[in-house]
Length: 201
Image 1 (tube, rainbow, N blue to C red):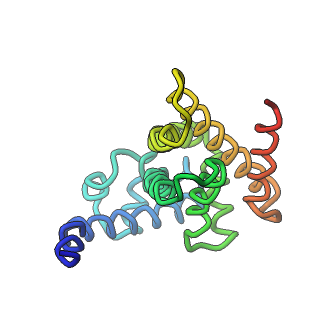
Image 2: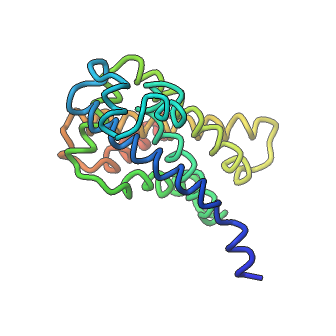
Image 3: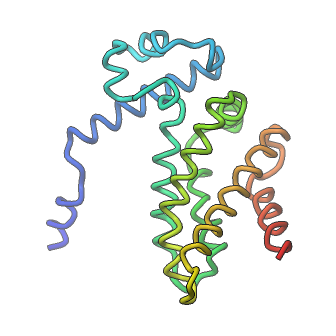
């Protein structure tokens, strides 16, 4: 039975292959954006660097912005999965902090991470898109947070507020980490932001 469960839960090979190609194109795009600038890099240049046609690229991504922000959706899903795996009686804020650590597990250098963060926050369109993608994180986390809260008339509202506050703290910490050029631990900054929010009430 265990074997059958493992087989049925594994995505088909075609889906795995598509995910790999999508990831490689996205990595190529981010490298090009970091080197030349988001606005200065064309989709055609990204396609050529990735060794695919423009048409093929758009089979994987809806737009240039989607190309730059694609990783955020996957990160949100992994964060939600990590939160769901935490103990139900654990402090919600502790579980959220541990879930956000998914971002630290991405294999990259500090320099590369700085390039990406600078890119995301340096463009108005990408900054707006980044906020929109992170609002999806809130949608994923809020129902899980709600289950841990005491029954009340406004339990879902409270859950959404906690998720939104935690994500905003993470974003503020990331911007400060970028401003400091990675010289301070990101989660030390996140902790400071969360403490400020929780002290306020």
